[in-house]
Image (cartoon, rainbow, N blue to C red; front, top):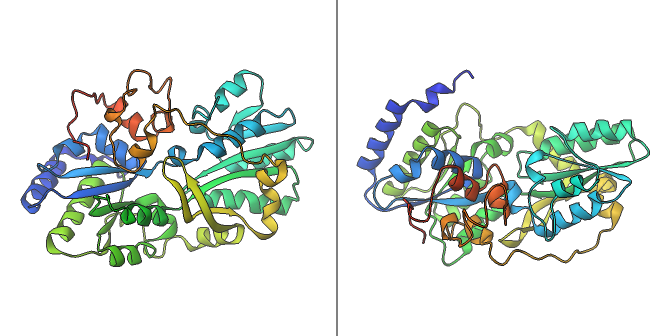
Length: 370
């Protein structure tokens, strides 16, 4: 891929680490919000190479992981119906609900299909007018525009058998909820570059000002993250608290206004439950106005299913950065990517999966938990 190797140059990485060591005079605590960034930090060992005492706190930016159990159980209820074609991205199929997962339902005969875009689900609805087609719409602001466009296209086609099971969440309310916690240790944030490519970074400016925390919009490659950490530390050392953009090759302050327009037409903000975190005011999206007819919950009336988290799973504490995966008694034994107890172990962006893939063990914990 063009312009990729440049952001993985080991010589430049060493120079950034040396500059970071010269700059940092205190054991700063920085949270990377995005699960994709967590995987890069852990896979490359960047978190273990930081100056003594400095710690990266792994945040709740894994959309699969924060999808509430209630939504997953609703998905199982809908997917099990014989008149439904249930569609989802592949990373949701093995996320455990209270009693089963979508992959197991498919093995038992449910028509559960992996799609690559929500438009694939729209096409299925056109090809199968006698069946209802449901797409599991999860994710942060990054995936909301594609789901909004799918709804707009279905509306133009006059489809009456296409529905979304929506569980979209928004980053800024999660950041403020973390900062409002009296036990919060976060002193600066690395903001996810792909979210900001859609939304820009204006939403973070009031957070930086109110809580006096630096926010650095950062990419996903090793040099992106090292540069972003260095930018955050420079702010912390100088007493500044601003929003800065490290990811200049992809992000502008105003973001993608066409994508924002589509999202604002189809969705409205709502309170949303986050798995392991709880219900956060104004932290989600739901279908609005004439597009509410595409709401799967409204169509199927699944009610409020009984949910039951595995008592051994500490996903909530991992998602908020309060604990590390290696603090879990089931980590690497009863909970593995093949047999996960919770979403952070199965998701491609989950912190537990990142630690497991990197071979992190309870005996070799380079970064202490708080």
